Amino acid sequence: MKNLNETIKQVLSDESDVRAATAPFQADFPYDRDEEAQVTRREFCNFLGLTSAALFLGAGGFAAKAALDARKSEAFSASRIEGSETLVPNSSLNFNYPTERDSAILIRTSDGSYHAYGQKCTHLSCPVYYSRDHQRLECPCHDGAFDAATGNVLYGPPPRALDTIEIEVRNGQIWAIGRRASTDEHAS
Image (tube, rainbow, N blue to C red; front, side, top):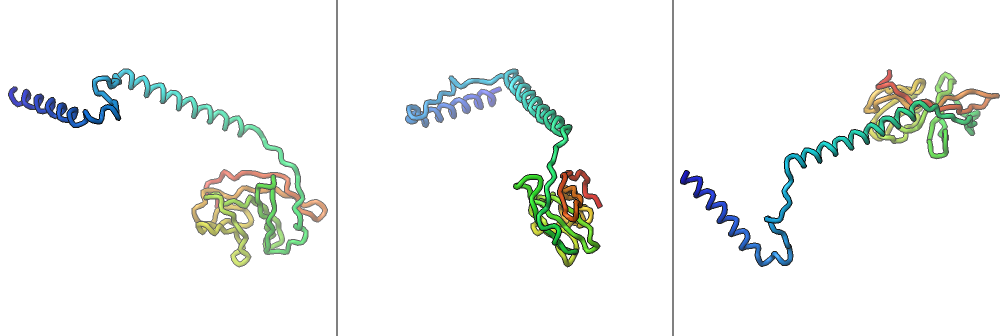
């Protein structure tokens, strides 16, 4: 019991020493421990509960909006791909679709078939390019590669296939008619 009393006296004397040392600065930094607001356990738990509920409701709102947006089918207007009629086999052409800000790439494979994809890599949105030597789409940022005929991931860090631009041939000209986001995880 004697040790406990001595410990309490020591703590109280330390408190006095701290107060005496900080007294000259009290005018500049008026902070009094006696007036410090104490937060009860109940108040703290109420704060945590309300904050958690607010975050949960906010996340639920975003999820509901995403679900509603997913139900809407986006209507794309048909757009002629300028210069596509001069595209030779085993080459590519960059174009914008569905808006001027969305870059895309049209590929004519060595067998003469046409394929179009969004030009952003699904890893970190670096622009992909067509490699004639390897006959595939490559991402120079992290060495990812995509199949030119399907848009599927061949290797590298991309998590999914490229977004597909739907095309059709009209009187010898290539038209972009829609865009479909890929959902396949590492489709091969």
